[in-house]
Image (spheres, rainbow over the protein chains, first blue to last red):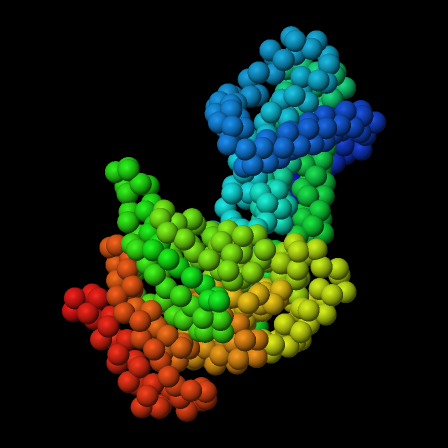
Length: 245
Length: 256
């Protein structure tokens, strides 16, 4: 694909602002490595902390909603309301609250954006349990907490990992787009807008490449954690069945 | 003392509301210790509801149920019965052995005793080499055998089964019935078994309780005397007589 990209650009020779060839982007990536690495560290920190905070909040909310009726009546409408807000549009407002060059508003944007998919999926996993499995636990006189620990939480884990994979790429997008509006000047988002504004397109693309690398690393980390945590799940084991009665 | 005593039990769902359902009406039934009793009837006859009342997963609107001389609720809290459902309901995150050990874990057995017990139960259902497998690696029939092993793991005196073989193909089903009879004889457990298969009810039971729907009532109790079952029992004229009697009783119920 990269060969095709490189070749097509060599043949058609469009202006540089349309699309620089991969070789130039990679070149810019290494020429500008110090600034890109700093940007990746700053933005990476925002992505990871925002993702972790949003994920923990979402999972705790999902547990409360599943366990307590009252919590469900309070949290569920609130979560739905939050999901209806175009969260990224709040970036300039949050940046006014915390200061234009603070990382806080962008962390908050990331956390809010990943909250909903994780909350919805975790809640689904906690509540979509086979009815007879709950009856079985009740026949053992198991308490609600025991059922939560032994049945609902393990049942929810595959859902949690699916939502984390989704959230890991959402978090990258959220952080970089939020940085277009403000935040630390050495972050990836500012590197992209700054370079693009100065017609340094290869450098802007190199910063995008850094964002892609962060997203990929996060995704791989989630997949590794998934394999270690739920090796029993059919998506991981494959579904080989022993025949016979 | 009866293993299970159901006295004048009625169950009404959503009482007083528009969607009120009279599921069970004035049912009386005593089940002796060591007996194998089947509940059969058309859908909506309340057979599964009755089983859940005995299990104290539901509570009766009227009447009383005692299990092993205690209230059904107390029997549940004391774990006096084991239960198996149409879906094996194994937990896919636990190995087969760990699934069998689950009730023992909840009862606070130590690890060594649990291991020993699950190994014994795997022997009993003739799947000794599958302890470390995950349920998804087993066929439907094998999963159901594990579910039965799990329901018997803590040696309950009563086994409640809700159409446990309903999802199995015919050959596997017959095989499972034979296995269940063998286990029943080996463990001397009382069994209450819900089914909608006439031959299944006849081959398994000492008594077949035929129920009629709307509201669920007992319409007839048919004693079955096939003596000790063997592979030939299914071709025994007595077996066919039993099947015919149950079929006629069910036809009467459905007004056919």
